[in-house]
Length: 245
Ligand code: 13P
Image (cartoon, rainbow, N blue to C red):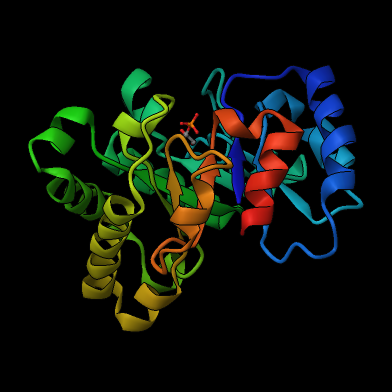
Protein backbone atom coordinates (compact mmCIF):
# COMPACT_ATOMS: atom_id res chain seq x y z
CA UNK A 1 0.00 0.00 0.00
CA UNK A 2 1.63 3.18 -1.16
CA UNK A 3 0.93 6.80 -0.30
CA UNK A 4 1.81 9.40 -2.90
CA UNK A 5 1.63 12.75 -1.15
CA UNK A 6 2.38 14.75 -4.31
CA UNK A 7 3.11 18.42 -3.45
CA UNK A 8 1.38 18.33 -0.07
CA UNK A 9 2.77 18.53 3.49
CA UNK A 10 5.85 20.48 4.59
CA UNK A 11 8.41 19.05 7.04
CA UNK A 12 6.34 19.83 10.16
CA UNK A 13 3.18 18.40 8.64
CA UNK A 14 5.14 15.30 7.67
CA UNK A 15 6.31 14.81 11.29
CA UNK A 16 2.77 15.35 12.56
CA UNK A 17 1.49 12.65 10.20
CA UNK A 18 4.04 10.10 11.41
CA UNK A 19 3.32 10.89 15.05
CA UNK A 20 -0.27 9.90 14.48
CA UNK A 21 0.17 7.20 11.87
CA UNK A 22 3.05 5.09 13.22
CA UNK A 23 1.20 3.96 16.39
CA UNK A 24 -1.73 2.86 14.20
CA UNK A 25 0.49 0.40 12.32
CA UNK A 26 -0.15 -2.79 14.28
CA UNK A 27 1.86 -6.00 14.05
CA UNK A 28 -1.10 -7.55 12.28
CA UNK A 29 -0.41 -5.61 9.10
CA UNK A 30 1.07 -7.96 6.53
CA UNK A 31 1.38 -5.72 3.53
CA UNK A 32 4.29 -3.42 2.76
CA UNK A 33 3.56 0.23 3.43
CA UNK A 34 5.51 2.87 1.53
CA UNK A 35 5.09 6.62 1.85
CA UNK A 36 6.28 9.04 -0.82
CA UNK A 37 6.62 12.51 0.77
CA UNK A 38 8.02 15.63 -0.86
CA UNK A 39 11.74 15.04 -1.46
CA UNK A 40 12.75 17.74 1.00
CA UNK A 41 10.93 15.82 3.74
CA UNK A 42 12.48 12.42 2.98
CA UNK A 43 15.19 12.51 5.69
CA UNK A 44 12.63 13.52 8.34
CA UNK A 45 10.21 10.85 7.19
CA UNK A 46 12.95 8.20 7.22
CA UNK A 47 13.82 9.15 10.78
CA UNK A 48 10.19 9.21 11.89
CA UNK A 49 9.55 5.77 10.35
CA UNK A 50 12.78 4.21 11.62
CA UNK A 51 11.26 1.96 14.28
CA UNK A 52 8.33 0.95 12.12
CA UNK A 53 7.73 -1.24 9.08
CA UNK A 54 6.99 1.82 6.95
CA UNK A 55 9.33 2.46 4.03
CA UNK A 56 9.99 5.81 2.39
CA UNK A 57 10.33 6.65 -1.29
CA UNK A 58 10.95 9.55 -3.64
CA UNK A 59 8.31 10.85 -6.04
CA UNK A 60 10.79 11.36 -8.85
CA UNK A 61 14.38 10.59 -9.83
CA UNK A 62 16.76 11.81 -12.51
CA UNK A 63 18.51 9.28 -14.73
CA UNK A 64 22.07 10.59 -14.45
CA UNK A 65 24.20 9.68 -11.45
CA UNK A 66 25.39 13.26 -11.04
CA UNK A 67 26.10 16.30 -13.16
CA UNK A 68 24.97 19.76 -14.18
CA UNK A 69 21.21 19.14 -13.93
CA UNK A 70 19.87 22.03 -11.89
CA UNK A 71 16.97 21.06 -9.69
CA UNK A 72 17.24 17.31 -10.17
CA UNK A 73 17.87 14.54 -7.63
CA UNK A 74 19.77 11.33 -8.38
CA UNK A 75 19.01 7.82 -7.24
CA UNK A 76 22.16 7.79 -5.17
CA UNK A 77 21.01 10.95 -3.36
CA UNK A 78 17.61 9.43 -2.61
CA UNK A 79 19.26 6.28 -1.36
CA UNK A 80 21.69 8.23 0.83
CA UNK A 81 18.71 10.07 2.34
CA UNK A 82 17.23 6.71 3.36
CA UNK A 83 14.67 6.22 0.60
CA UNK A 84 14.26 2.67 -0.70
CA UNK A 85 11.49 3.19 -3.28
CA UNK A 86 10.77 5.70 -6.02
CA UNK A 87 7.84 6.58 -8.27
CA UNK A 88 8.60 6.77 -11.98
CA UNK A 89 6.46 8.11 -14.80
CA UNK A 90 3.49 9.34 -12.78
CA UNK A 91 0.86 10.81 -15.12
CA UNK A 92 1.34 14.24 -13.52
CA UNK A 93 5.03 14.07 -14.48
CA UNK A 94 4.10 12.99 -17.99
CA UNK A 95 1.48 15.75 -18.26
CA UNK A 96 3.20 18.78 -16.66
CA UNK A 97 6.87 17.89 -17.17
CA UNK A 98 6.57 16.19 -20.55
CA UNK A 99 8.05 12.88 -19.45
CA UNK A 100 8.10 10.31 -22.22
CA UNK A 101 8.12 6.52 -22.24
CA UNK A 102 11.81 6.47 -23.15
CA UNK A 103 12.57 8.85 -20.26
CA UNK A 104 10.56 6.58 -17.97
CA UNK A 105 12.77 3.67 -19.06
CA UNK A 106 15.97 5.61 -18.29
CA UNK A 107 14.66 6.65 -14.87
CA UNK A 108 13.58 3.09 -14.09
CA UNK A 109 17.07 1.82 -14.95
CA UNK A 110 18.65 4.55 -12.82
CA UNK A 111 16.44 3.58 -9.88
CA UNK A 112 17.40 -0.08 -10.13
CA UNK A 113 21.06 0.84 -10.39
CA UNK A 114 20.74 2.88 -7.18
CA UNK A 115 19.04 -0.08 -5.43
CA UNK A 116 15.70 1.67 -5.22
CA UNK A 117 12.51 -0.20 -6.07
CA UNK A 118 10.70 1.76 -8.77
CA UNK A 119 6.92 1.81 -9.05
CA UNK A 120 6.47 2.51 -12.74
CA UNK A 121 3.16 4.25 -13.42
CA UNK A 122 1.04 3.96 -16.53
CA UNK A 123 -2.54 4.67 -17.51
CA UNK A 124 -4.79 6.15 -20.16
CA UNK A 125 -6.40 9.59 -20.35
CA UNK A 126 -10.13 10.24 -20.31
CA UNK A 127 -10.50 10.49 -24.09
CA UNK A 128 -8.73 7.17 -24.59
CA UNK A 129 -10.90 5.59 -21.91
CA UNK A 130 -14.04 6.93 -23.60
CA UNK A 131 -12.93 5.76 -27.04
CA UNK A 132 -12.12 2.26 -25.83
CA UNK A 133 -8.40 2.77 -26.40
CA UNK A 134 -7.18 2.08 -22.85
CA UNK A 135 -5.40 -1.15 -23.71
CA UNK A 136 -3.81 0.35 -26.80
CA UNK A 137 -2.30 3.10 -24.62
CA UNK A 138 -1.09 0.63 -21.99
CA UNK A 139 0.52 -1.57 -24.64
CA UNK A 140 2.25 1.48 -26.15
CA UNK A 141 3.48 2.74 -22.78
CA UNK A 142 4.75 -0.74 -21.91
CA UNK A 143 6.51 -1.20 -25.24
CA UNK A 144 8.15 2.24 -25.22
CA UNK A 145 9.13 2.02 -21.55
CA UNK A 146 9.70 -1.00 -19.35
CA UNK A 147 9.87 -3.51 -22.22
CA UNK A 148 13.40 -2.12 -22.63
CA UNK A 149 14.51 -3.55 -19.28
CA UNK A 150 16.41 -6.80 -19.03
CA UNK A 151 14.64 -9.74 -17.37
CA UNK A 152 16.82 -9.28 -14.35
CA UNK A 153 15.94 -5.58 -14.09
CA UNK A 154 12.25 -6.28 -14.57
CA UNK A 155 12.28 -8.57 -11.51
CA UNK A 156 13.08 -5.50 -9.38
CA UNK A 157 10.15 -3.28 -10.30
CA UNK A 158 6.51 -2.82 -9.36
CA UNK A 159 3.91 -1.30 -11.67
CA UNK A 160 1.00 1.02 -10.95
CA UNK A 161 -2.02 1.24 -13.22
CA UNK A 162 -3.35 4.76 -12.79
CA UNK A 163 -6.06 5.78 -15.24
CA UNK A 164 -5.72 9.55 -15.56
CA UNK A 165 -9.50 10.05 -15.51
CA UNK A 166 -9.67 8.47 -12.05
CA UNK A 167 -6.91 10.55 -10.42
CA UNK A 168 -8.19 13.16 -8.00
CA UNK A 169 -11.64 13.03 -9.58
CA UNK A 170 -13.46 10.82 -7.09
CA UNK A 171 -14.31 8.62 -10.05
CA UNK A 172 -12.56 5.33 -9.25
CA UNK A 173 -12.22 2.65 -11.89
CA UNK A 174 -14.57 -0.19 -11.02
CA UNK A 175 -12.75 -3.31 -9.81
CA UNK A 176 -13.65 -4.94 -13.15
CA UNK A 177 -12.16 -2.11 -15.24
CA UNK A 178 -9.02 -2.05 -13.13
CA UNK A 179 -8.64 -5.84 -13.25
CA UNK A 180 -9.01 -5.83 -17.03
CA UNK A 181 -6.25 -3.23 -17.37
CA UNK A 182 -4.03 -5.18 -14.98
CA UNK A 183 -4.58 -8.32 -17.06
CA UNK A 184 -3.50 -6.40 -20.14
CA UNK A 185 -0.28 -5.27 -18.42
CA UNK A 186 0.34 -8.81 -17.17
CA UNK A 187 -0.17 -10.22 -20.62
CA UNK A 188 2.34 -7.74 -22.09
CA UNK A 189 4.70 -8.78 -19.31
CA UNK A 190 4.29 -12.43 -20.16
CA UNK A 191 4.98 -11.82 -23.84
CA UNK A 192 8.16 -9.92 -23.12
CA UNK A 193 9.49 -11.41 -19.87
CA UNK A 194 7.77 -14.79 -19.54
CA UNK A 195 5.09 -16.32 -17.40
CA UNK A 196 6.94 -16.33 -14.09
CA UNK A 197 7.66 -12.61 -14.33
CA UNK A 198 4.01 -11.97 -15.20
CA UNK A 199 2.83 -13.90 -12.17
CA UNK A 200 5.28 -12.28 -9.82
CA UNK A 201 5.19 -8.60 -10.77
CA UNK A 202 3.11 -6.56 -8.38
CA UNK A 203 0.56 -4.29 -10.05
CA UNK A 204 -0.98 -1.58 -7.90
CA UNK A 205 -4.12 0.32 -8.75
CA UNK A 206 -4.25 4.10 -8.26
CA UNK A 207 -7.00 6.64 -8.82
CA UNK A 208 -9.44 7.88 -6.16
CA UNK A 209 -8.80 4.95 -3.82
CA UNK A 210 -10.78 5.51 -0.60
CA UNK A 211 -11.64 3.43 2.48
CA UNK A 212 -15.05 2.66 0.97
CA UNK A 213 -13.80 1.27 -2.35
CA UNK A 214 -10.53 -0.41 -1.38
CA UNK A 215 -12.12 -3.69 -0.28
CA UNK A 216 -13.83 -4.21 -3.63
CA UNK A 217 -10.61 -3.42 -5.49
CA UNK A 218 -8.48 -5.73 -3.35
CA UNK A 219 -10.96 -8.57 -3.91
CA UNK A 220 -9.74 -8.73 -7.49
CA UNK A 221 -6.94 -11.25 -7.71
CA UNK A 222 -5.26 -9.09 -10.33
CA UNK A 223 -4.88 -6.13 -7.96
CA UNK A 224 -1.88 -6.46 -5.67
CA UNK A 225 -2.06 -3.14 -3.87
CA UNK A 226 -2.96 0.51 -4.18
CA UNK A 227 -1.19 3.78 -4.87
CA UNK A 228 -3.18 6.33 -2.92
CA UNK A 229 -3.11 10.10 -3.36
CA UNK A 230 -5.61 12.31 -1.53
CA UNK A 231 -6.84 9.66 0.91
CA UNK A 232 -3.29 8.99 2.14
CA UNK A 233 -2.82 12.48 3.58
CA UNK A 234 -4.90 11.80 6.65
CA UNK A 235 -3.51 9.12 9.03
CA UNK A 236 -6.95 7.86 10.10
CA UNK A 237 -8.09 7.50 6.50
CA UNK A 238 -4.89 5.92 5.20
CA UNK A 239 -4.76 3.34 8.01
CA UNK A 240 -8.24 2.14 7.00
CA UNK A 241 -6.93 1.54 3.48
CA UNK A 242 -3.81 -0.24 4.80
CA UNK A 243 -5.95 -2.42 7.07
CA UNK A 244 -8.12 -3.45 4.13
CA UNK A 245 -5.09 -5.19 2.62
P1 13P B 1 -5.86 10.20 -5.87
O1 13P B 1 -5.91 9.02 -4.94
O2 13P B 1 -5.87 11.51 -5.18
O3 13P B 1 -6.87 10.08 -6.96
O4 13P B 1 -4.41 10.13 -6.59
C1 13P B 1 -3.99 8.96 -7.17
C2 13P B 1 -2.57 9.09 -7.56
O5 13P B 1 -2.23 9.82 -8.47
C3 13P B 1 -1.57 8.34 -6.79
O6 13P B 1 -0.33 8.37 -7.41
